Image (tube, rainbow, N blue to C red):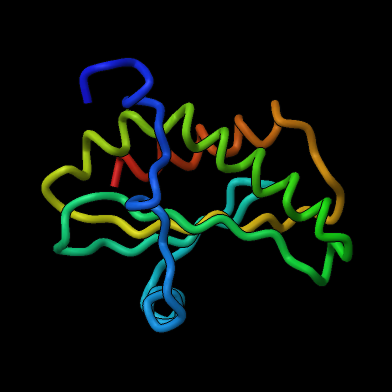
Amino acid sequence: MTNAQGIYSFPKSEKLCGQTRIKDFYEKGEHFTCYPLRVTWLSLAEPGVKVLVWAPKSLFRHAVQRNHLRRLIREAYRLNAIGLKQKYTDTGLQLAFNYIAKEELSFHQINKAVQKAILKLCKL
């Protein structure tokens, strides 16, 4: 990644997808909380970082609200993930951000939580 746009990108290859992979991930993964996010993570042998972002339908009935929250979390991750990507170039990491607050919070609060979570993951 040479240009600035490549450093801050969030391509499809970094997104965690597939029902069986996600099911296995949640069964084997460990978690911690950085309010308003619950972060689940799992180390892998495959290089690279895969991310899943989730906002619950039980708390936010309207898809517009869930989509907005997911966009905020993805943007915060995209802006702060450089150190995490550098650390996990040889080994792999699967990561999920689950929004647990009952109300919509600002981007500033979500960004602080993502920064704290990434810092904690870099120390592992």
